[in-house]
Length: 173
Image 1 (cartoon, one colour):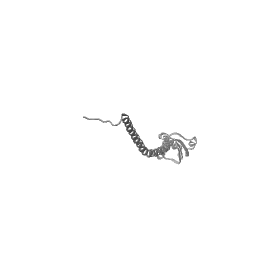
Image 2 (image 1 turned 135 degrees about the horizontal axis):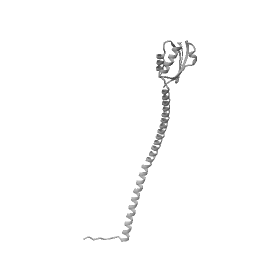
Image 3 (image 1 turned 90 degrees about the horizontal axis):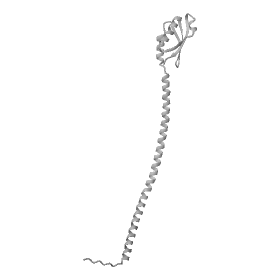
Image 4 (image 1 turned 90 degrees about the vertical axis):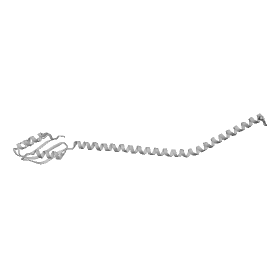
């Protein structure tokens, strides 16, 4: 059998229990305070580091945006150059092919003194032995398929021999 002896009064026991509870609460509060302090000590440098990383990130984004803007500007400039190049290519005539065609069309008795090619216009200056050779040459130019709107002034046909002539026309694209 067990005998229980109680040497303290119930009031003292209650006070003792309250004292233990207060001590326990003080210890818990102290631990919480200590943990908060440790977390704060760790968090402050992390916060500073985070701010530094944010600044670096923002600088990097600004630099990337500037590079993007410059790239767009460069692309626009390149596009303009390509458009200019394409325009030149579209207006380009293969002069060697034109000269080759003209030389194959020149009949016997025709001498070309000067040839003027300006964009799509062509002017041929020369001398024909006879008016008939000049008419033949004009007809060959018209039938060639490379030239259009072949014109020859009326004064080209006044002389029957040793005819100085000027023939103009357009180059077909």
